[in-house]
Length: 247
Image (cartoon, rainbow, N blue to C red):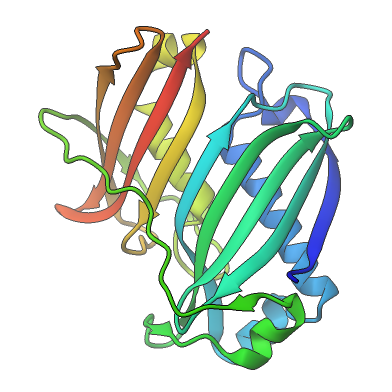
C-alpha cells in the first residue's frame, strides 16, 4: 500500500486573495512542498533524481474543491504516490482542516524527464520503490476538454523567477496566467469548484506567452465554466477547464 505523508500548514496572509481564501497557485505550491518532503524523507529527493540526470515533471491535475482554505486556518496537506506504469506516476493529494473535514482533493500525473534531451524517460523502478506504489498497466485518462470557440487573449512575458530547477516554468505559474485574464470583477465574485488542467509542452525563460480564455454560464446559473489555452508562438503548451461557483 502506498505510503501516506502529511504536513501541517497555517494559511498566511500572502497566500490569500481579497476574500481571505487561499489562492490556487499557493495551494499548488504547498502541495508540491508536501510531495518534495516525502521524497526527501524516502531518500528520493531532487538531489537523488538529478544525479541520474532526471527531473520530475507534472502533466495533469484534476482538482475538486469543497471549499478553499481560509486565512489563519491550520490545514493538513497529505499526499501519496498511488500507482505507476511504464511512463506515468500517479499521485493524490488530500487537503483537510484540523477536524478532518476534506476541503480539496487532487489527482495528478508525473513523468520523469531527461534533463539533457528534455524527453520523457521510462519510470525507474529503483526511484519509485520506496513509495510502495501499485504497479499497473493501464493509463488513467482525464476528461477531454472542449475547444475554445471565440476566445479573448492576453500576453505574458516569462520572467526569471518563473523558472524552477528543471529550467522551465514552474507549474504553479501557469495558474497565474490562466486566472489573471479573468479580471478583478470575476475573480472577486467567484470561487473555484473544479479544475482539469493538462501541461503539454514546457515553457522557457524569455518566451512570450499568450493566455486564451472564454467563459460560459452553465445550466446551473450559479456556476460558470472558464476554458483556457496557453500558447507560445501558436503552439499549445497548456489547456484547462475550470468550474466556478458564484459567491
